[in-house]
Image 1: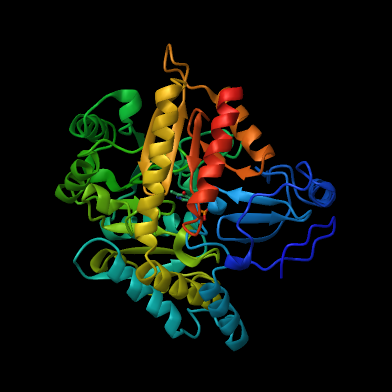
Image 2: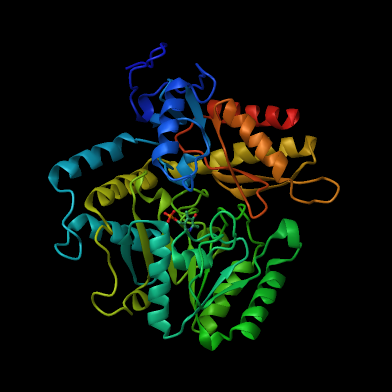
Length: 453
Ligand SMILES: *Cc1c(COP(=O)(O)O)cnc(C)c1O
């Protein structure tokens, strides 16, 4: 079904059947989106915000279509979720088949094979050649909560260390682990106790080698907490919401070695970096670390809500029977979607595509940086690349410029996300199903917006 050029378009096909072109029929929001967003303002609390002022009706390849028939270029994948492409046909088919078979039994009541198959796949695909087990949950935050529960039970210790600029979710414990107050934490306390923060390696801003940044963090942990009290450290191998901060080489291995030497569980939060996003199945591989536990979610199931904790069998088995679970965790429809997505990740060249996209994005952004010193840093791996905007004289973060560029790009039909503790980073997280043409057009529009700002 082609997208009709009228003011009341027929609902187009999702997935790769959508025409792969940016096309604005109206200003954004168009009249139908505006009507739906007015209902949102009445029915949904103001706390639930939105980045792009449209109501989506279909998406696929590198395109999101809105209720007025506008086609937008997707450079965000719904925050790194639709990595294999929105409404991927294999996932849509797997979901439909499972929904017709059974929708729920609760894995803790009557287990089913697809959950176990997802666990087996995670145990096989995650870094580390040791015996592993996996438990499934609904969201990234829930996976992080459970990783901490498991680490505490395994060690008999309570303290947990998270890092500057870290993001781990919006539940009470994960708010405590998250660094940034606005908008994630402000006014929502008190927060969970026994959470401590250590300095991150942020090469663009601290200029430290990985070993130096690790020594700084470890000294602080030893002096302020004490290894004997510490259950776990949790860290994103490349930080997501905090600004796509890529730690200096050697930082993560030094932390991981210190954890092993001190009986501390090393948890890699790969909720954003996992599943081919960085041009590797997991970002831990880039840095040569084998975490004791890995949390995953976002890219795992092509958009269905699913999350996991995967790790060393002896750590994962620390909990008493019945200690882990949840009504919906590992829902059969989400598991069917994950198995289809994993099939795509393993067999359809997705990792190679992430690497190609990474080269295209970083080449283009580095060329822009060479011409405009307000781009202070370009960093990332694979299809997880960011540009940090600064005052070229002082390197001070320029959040206003960042917001202006993002807003102008969105108005032109390019879905682009910002991030960073200082709000001065534009991040690129396109679906790996996007074509080079759309990707280049999206960057052209962002470059023009920058030139005009
Ligand atoms: C998004 C995210 C989370 C939280 O996941 P939800 O599914 O939103 O609960 C946790 N950790 C990281 C690194 C994330 O990017």
